[in-house]
Length: 408
Image (cartoon, rainbow, N blue to C red):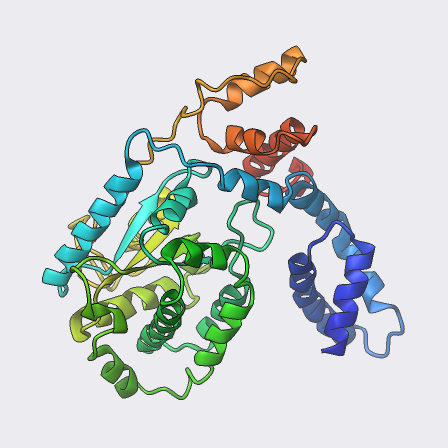
């Protein structure tokens, strides 16, 4: 622990532009580097920290400057929290479809999957829509994006690290029921918290005050996940959830997983977290009594729009019906893609303080297309570099997360 604190403090001093989260993530890289360095150089007296910086600092500095200094997280947050423009009643349509799909799943739960997908390109407001829905329906939000992502909300760091570096590392094929146990503990704690807060306040807590206390409590609740037996989990699934006993038969809780492609394996021979997740949801549908909640996946990639892997990734299963999940044999719900946010700022006026002709032209362009650009400019009026920062942000996205092509 002492080495950890020394590294974070020193790295933060050497890189004042880096956030605490970035420094903590860098320490994980340093641990691996330290072990490899001393293994390959036994008895060496060279400063390992200095060698680490020499190898990693150049690219890191470019990436950090681009991802953090030029497009500060708090500035993105301001844009994210602008009033939602809903001229086409997207929020109402989404909630209507969500409840309808849940009711249909409840009636035919052995035939339909327990999840739904929201699919759209980056910058069109997927997470903003969920933020609005969460004002009415309690929503547990997990983001699995990389730590250095330019998006907002940022990574749910504690649970993301647990899933990637501990849970899925030790999980065995056929143990998907352990995921059902994790879900149960997540929902139970979330429901307990929600009894003393409004749905909207629950969202606000997740975006701020809960980091990291809520997720630390979650990890404490699931620390015995290796000792739990399948019979224990089946017993839990055979009972109603706490919130199933009141109100109409609608969704009372959403489990939202953003950047869901992070659940897909990097290699064909690696364990497939999403395949295990699907099987856990199938088990809940076919063997459990749980209801009144729904799982929602958000992402941008068309190849995972329904999160049904192609037969090339799992040749042991095959179903020619495109609406049937190849892994579970259950019917997939059509993804939600109706985000009518294109050009929603086209009638907005260009600020009077923008006098340079080139800058005015850029402002005119940001009013069109995806709303992220103009939302950022509108919410950061006091920042004289806001237009340049926005250009750098879109450059990073175009180049796949780096500052220039030499690091692509």
